[in-house]
Amino acid sequence: MANLLTLNDISSLIILSHMTVMGFLKISAFLSGVLFAPLAHAQTDKTGQDITVFAAASLRGALDEIAQTSPDNVTLSYAGSGSIARQVSLGAPADVVILAHPRWMEWLTDKGITNNRHDIAHNTLVVIGAKDAPTLDPENLAARLGSDRLAMGQHLSVPAGIYAQSWLEHINQWDALSTQLAEVENVRLALALVARNETPLGVVYRSDALAEKSVSVLYDIPPHTHAPITYPASALSPKGEAFIALLTSTKAQAILQAHGFITPQAIK
Image 1 (cartoon, helix red, strand yellow):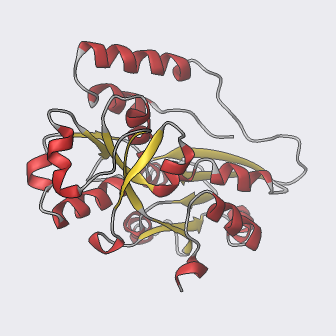
Image 2 (spheres, helix red, strand yellow):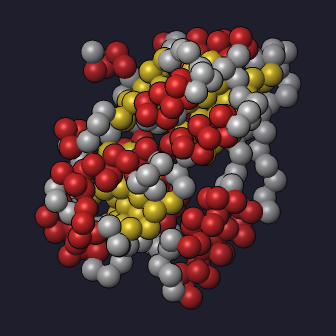
């Protein structure tokens, strides 16, 4: 039901890993398992209409489960929010767009591409490491990294990277660590780098950490150190309105909560 890694994802993973031959070979081995795998598509045995959803990569898993409850044939395509917004602005055929930062939805609104917004979920930010790694004191972040890199989304376009930069600036470590970042195309790639021991630490959403058994949460980043993490959704066609209604239903909100997201009702 979800598209696999894009070429942008792949180039980011290769270029921004350890930059060593061994690191490149390990990443290449990982990519060989997904690059040539068959694409996963939405179910085709439902009687409803066909709906295409472009969604932030961090929603994978939760959104797959929600789509299964739809009477319609839902095709899900995951990427970084910035990439999604740019693709939609160029005419990519999406009925629904779900992003991980209001900034990109506002950008689409300013371009006249959408005029509706529904905040469907919130999240928190965490630092992750290997399964048995000790907890992290953020004051010791540089020492824990040593000469290694901190995995995170690209700070200019990927919401998780934007939030991570705000946190690092808040604790006065951005300038010191900005040259030790493994910045990737979406947050799930940052998760993958840590899960495969390509980087010792990464900044991801709590929902991402819960989705990967080979990592553990080493530090909960305080919400006041960055802007609120919000997932705005928008219907880009009349067909998309049905999926928006599903996303805001009690059933879908319970699924999001079970995957580690925070529902809008929970923070009111």
